[in-house]
Length: 154
Image (cartoon, rainbow, N blue to C red; front, side, top):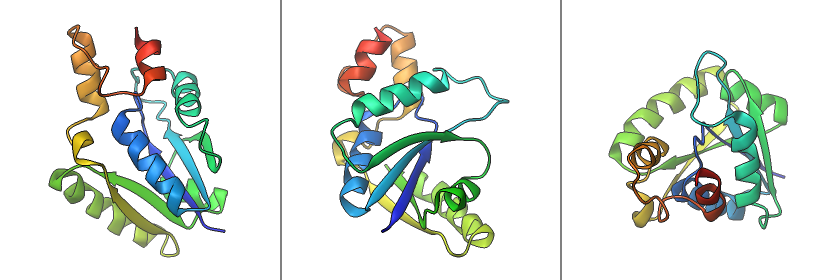
């Protein structure tokens, strides 16, 4: 059984994140969506709410587990018995950052592979920070986030 970790801040989860989750769930036996928690950073949403929203958005996907962790993703993956890190890509800029991260993760944990999935083109411009900016300026985010997130943010 192959277990993959899809880690991120998900602050908030977007349609792009959900696209990667749905695709990853079709590829791997088990996909753990792991909210990365950093006690030194103030997030937009509380960790508990992020977890709750992700669970609501993925409730119809049977092989998903939602969790949170603090520290290095590769250490968390080892704890969970995962052999794959799933990463979503939207653009060349994402790739440039992710390739550096992947090489460092390979040094730290050579037995853990990284798999990249591209979002659908219609989600390639969405990021949590853009969602927060639009929301802060009373813009319409209904096409950017899943319905449970939209309802929560209203």
